[in-house]
Amino acid sequence: MRPRRAAATLAGRAAALAVLFACVVALPAAAGADAGLAGHWRLNEALTRQVQPENKGSTSTSSGFPQPMIVVGGMPLPVPGTAAPQPGLGGASPDPMVMRCVELTVAPAGEELALEFSGVGSDRLRRGNNQGVVSRWSERRLTTHYRTTTRKVSQTWEIRRDGRLLVTVKLNPDHGKTQTHKRVFDRVAP
Image (cartoon, rainbow, N blue to C red; front, side):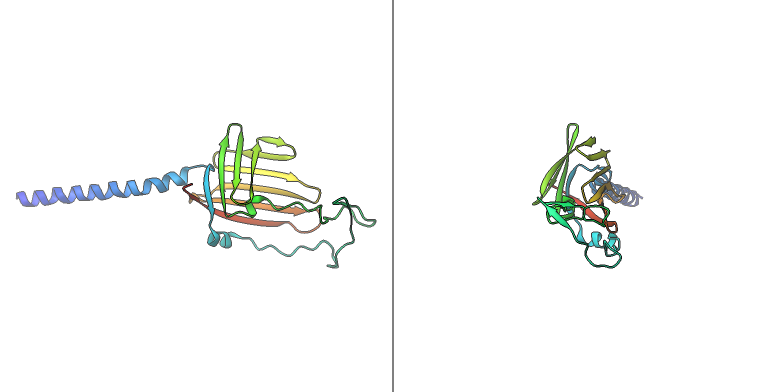
């Protein structure tokens, strides 16, 4: 009878160790899923392609022909017969840095949020309206929006249920259709 009892005890211990091992292995994954925006992120190109919405081409006129424009000192001026200035060579604002980077870092810095876009640049956000950029954030979500002379730009950064970072950028030009771009980032060790 003793060999059976010893075998049962050994099997019970082995099962307990297997459960403990599974919990220890799953712990970092669960911690990553519960972590907030802060951290180092790398673009997941495959998932980004999957979530990308279909953007229709944007045209500024019903005829499809370009509208005339006058640019003085890099600023577009109104042309008779048009409702507002058209974006010119110096009047077009660059796309948000999150759309042009492969890696980024989000770090709380007191009352600010520091964003580092590898190879592109950096930015510091303040809560509320700071020089025309309205920013709000919590541990798992960040929203910003601002207006330029040619378009409205809004960004939503949020942690998905799987622990990945989803960034949605909406570019709403004064003349043309709104474009929506989505990017998915995986958390990585710095």
